[in-house]
Length: 309
Image 1 (tube, helix red, strand yellow):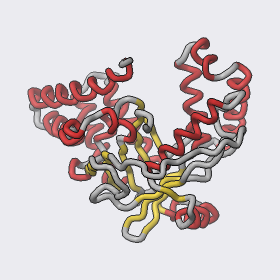
Image 2: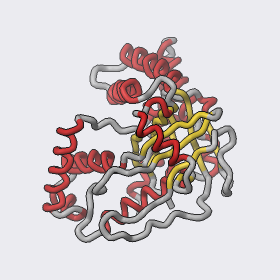
Image 3: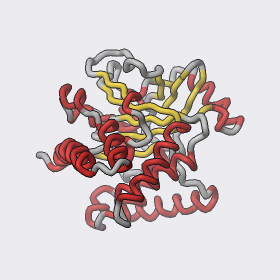
Image 4: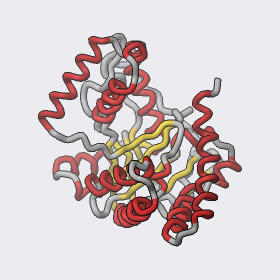
């Protein structure tokens, strides 16, 4: 069972990477290490659990991951590196600022916290780069994440098997490895389910949609609106990180296991968000309110599950 996390991934074309990295990812995509998207998510999860189960635990890997999610579209290769070390550091920084010391110590001893912080600060001073190509959200899909996608870019698969979702370019990603400290092998399911809900678009299409949403919402929402802030952050991220020919993928990840088939089939969140934005433009507050109610009821029900025993 995958964790209840949704993912927003940027897949860059090979030309976006320096020549040495370009050759590495080309060889990687053709190697046995390159595995399917769902298997890769399971491997990422296993690796993170193994780090926390080490004694002492590791807040971040000792070296950056050499793995990636890979897509092939029309014969062209697109790569989304895991960046596990950087993403772990950023998650660690969030934990330090949002969790109490008592809660933090339940997972990471003070010595590990100090060493992790020191390693992150040294790396950041040396590189100055904290841009990731994967965003994650636990227990929900943020409504701003639906804005870059057209409702027709939705891909849903309900049955289990080994195939890829209909309409989705075949994707591959790497398998697990071993815990960097204890050396424990990380298993990858041999027959992972493909129950999936994805949206996939081009960054060149996503940016105008985000710009339009920022313009519309800024004209209708009060100052300090959390939705407007999320839109602005997302627009800035895509604009700063994505190559003009990059692909953007919204993956429900483990959230598909919280929803039955009927709920997934009826989930038209992207269409409802776009309908609400159009209604804002046209001055139809009653339609905006109706779409907000639909979205709130759907995602409040999912978020409430985090408190279920």
